[in-house]
Length: 293
Image 1: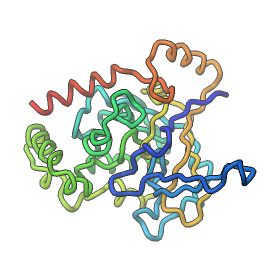
Image 2 (image 1 turned 90 degrees about the vertical axis):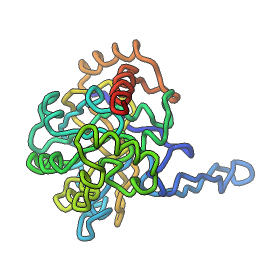
Image 3 (image 1 turned 120 degrees about the vertical axis):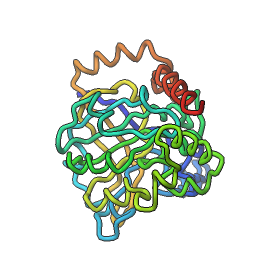
C-alpha cells in the first residue's frame, strides 16, 4: 500500500478563511539553555486542510472526537471540474456524474483546480482562492443527501460558493464581478440566485444530516482526478472540537502507485515539492476570461 498526500502545507503564510485567526508560532524553549526546542501555536480550526465538524453549524451535532475511523476512511472518488468551472461559476451534480461514478455512501472530493491559487503555488492568489472559486447550489446539496455521501472535500476556501457567504458583503469589488457573471449566465442578481433561504446551505443544511466536509484539500490531488480511490481524513481526537486541522490521504495499491509515479516525472512542482498540472490553470483562466466578457 502506498499513499498520496492531499494536504496543503501549513505555515504562518497559510491563509485562514477570511477573518479567522491565522497560525502564529513562537519558541518557548530552545536547546540552549532548556535542552530542547519547544513551540507554542495559536490558530483557528479553519486553517489549512481542515474538516468542518457538525457542531460548527449544528448545536446538537457530533464533535470531532465522535467521528469514527470507518466514517473518516472509506472508498470515494475525486472529480475534476476545472474544465467547466471558472471564477464564480456554479457546479452541479450533472457535471460530477458526467465525469465519474458516484456510489451511495461515497466520499466525494471536488477538484475545482483552485488549489493552484493556494499560497504554495506559482500561481498563488489568495483572493481568488478564497473569494472567486466556484460552488454549488441547493440542487447539488439535495443530490448529495440522496447519495448519502459520507463527507465531501473541496480544494479551495469553502464548500459553499463564496458569494453565498458573508464574503459577499466583505468583498464588494469581487461581488460586483460575480454579479456580472450571474446576470450573464442565469439572468439573476446574486441576491436573487443566492437568496436568504440558501445562505451557506452546504454548512447549514447538510450538517444536520451528518454530511460534513473537508476544505482546502490539495497536495498532489492533480495525480488522482476523475479516479476512484480509498480516501482518509485524520483530525485530532478533539473532544468538543467544532472543526479540526488534519491530514487528508489517498491510499493506493502498489501497482496503481507505480502508474502514478510515472506522471510525477513530467509535471512541474509547487514551492514545497507537490506536483501540479498547469493545464488545469489554463482551463480555469480561459473559462474565467469568458465569464467576464
